[in-house]
Amino acid sequence: MRSRYQDGKPRATLTTVTTIIPVGGSVTLTCSVGRSAEWKYEWFRRTQRTTEVQIRRDDQPNRVIRVSQGGIYSCRGIIRHRHYIYESDEVIIEITFSNKVAVKQQQHNWPQIFSGETITLTCEVQEGGEPTEWEYGWRGPRQTTQWTHNNSLTFRVSESSSGDYMCKSRRRDDSYSSTEWSEAFTLSVTTGKPRATLTLQSSIIPAGGSVTLSCSVEGSAGWKFDWFRRDSVSTEAQLMRGNEAKRDIRVSQGGLYHCRGGRGDPAFFSEDSNEVTVEETLSNKAVVTLHPNWPEIYRGETITVRCEIHGGDTEWDYEWKTSSYRKPENQNEYRIRPATTINSGNYRCKGRMKSSQHKTTEWSDSVTLTVSDNKPKAELRADNTAVPVGGSVTLTCSVRSSSGWKYYWYRDEKHSEPLTTQDAVFLSNGQIRVSQEGLYRCRGGRGDPVYYTEDSQSVWIGKTGEFGFNTQC
Image (cartoon, rainbow, N blue to C red; front, top):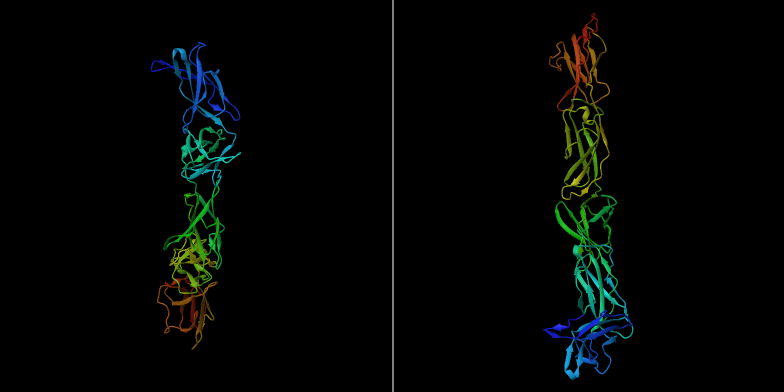
């Protein structure tokens, strides 16, 4: 409806129920000035590219007309003998083509779009009849219709981009002929960046082998992957770029690995994955040894657990695994002084190259260390308790269930100095021959510093004709 008066002057009124002509249809336009039957009406049509053309004259019954062509319409009422000529305002009428249009996401119809990605929507027109050059109108969330010669709409999405997008098209040579609006294309934008996930079948590369690493971005599609590696003595290096890398790669080199996903143009990248450590196993053999290597260690003794790596002259750092209460420091030797029962357990070690912390040997075989809480006691035996005239008696000292002992001999006073070659004849370790009477005893000692057993029982050695076995300590 248009106003009948403008600037204080009466005007014709042009009315219509709708300004959109449906496919194959028409719309009714009505022009009026007053109720007098004397009014006659003239109708005009123009476009933005053409000048106004009269389509109906006042010698016809033209108050109501039907039109099936789009354009800018106006009318005027005339009473010629009174020289009344009143013009209406203009009304834009659009005609609807039968061509179907649809909004589609170009290249990849990804089910999930993230804030920060760049996407392209296209307006596709189903052609019918002769080829037509189109203009395209776009309507988005909280946006008015925008017309463009390009059938694609490229933009970087944000949270506010979520919503429905529709398009329609019109002929370039006739701005008032257009298709209907397409069905809505619903865009759902996820806020925040997704994070890549790196998984691996094993974190240990066997000697001469490899392991598989896998990268993924959950809940989405279309990703290509970049891979990165570094180690403790080098900066990060990119192994593969997204245009050539796959989701899975095989690696035979130790290091710290991570990945990321990328898609689109320009590329949109996910957050980097967690960094995983992959260790490369070397062929060098690690061996655990005990020094001294006695089958049983007694509380208070000193023992060294040593990690030895065979093959090459590489400088190593060392790692230990043990079932004992105390874990060795990361050195090649673990000196236990004094040993206690909490040091008992299995010991394993491996070497790690100082020049490349992700290259290691395999774990060594286990070596068992047993520390006894009991202190051993020496035992003394004599082949005779009396020294024959001009003869001697042989004494034997021993420690059961153990080895490595050196024996110390004493006579009379408990804390006297050990016997020397002036006091006895030393036959072998653990055996002497004596020719003097007295109260004899012995003890064993081993290691550095020396660990001593408890003293043996005392044995009295007399002269010929004297007998007795004295257990006095």
